[in-house]
Length: 130
Image 1 (tube, helix red, strand yellow):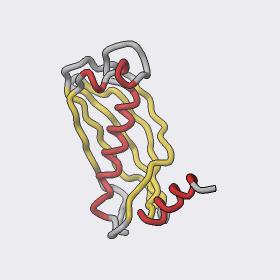
Image 2: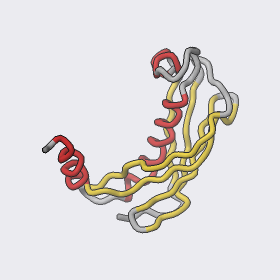
Image 3: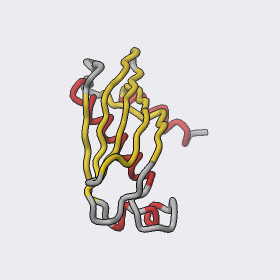
Image 4: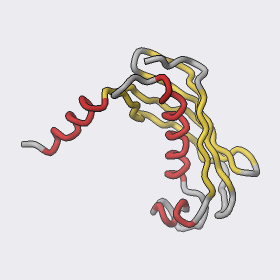
C-alpha cells in the first residue's frame, strides 16, 4: 500500500430524476438527495487512494460526518472532492466537499479502511452460515 496525505479525488454527476430525494426515499422533493451526495463523496475518496493500493486490496467506508447545506435542482452538475488528511496503518481519513454549479452544497470528514478483498468477502459471506 502506498497511500499518503495529500492524495486527492474528484467525482461528478448531473442531477437527474434518479438522484433526487424522491427517488432515494429520503424525502419528497425533486432535489439532489443527501444519500447520493454521500455516495459521491465516498467515490471521490476511494478513487483518490485506489492507485496506491496493492493487488487484491480495496477500501471500505466506516465513518462519514457531513453537512448538506444547499439544495440542488434537477439539471445541474454536482461534484465531490476529497483529500487524504491522515494515514494511520490501514485507516485513512479524508476531508470531503460537494459542490454544484452555484457553489458549496456539503462538506465534512470521511474514514475508510484498507482491506484484503478475499478476506473481507469471506467474512461477510460467513454471516449467511449457521
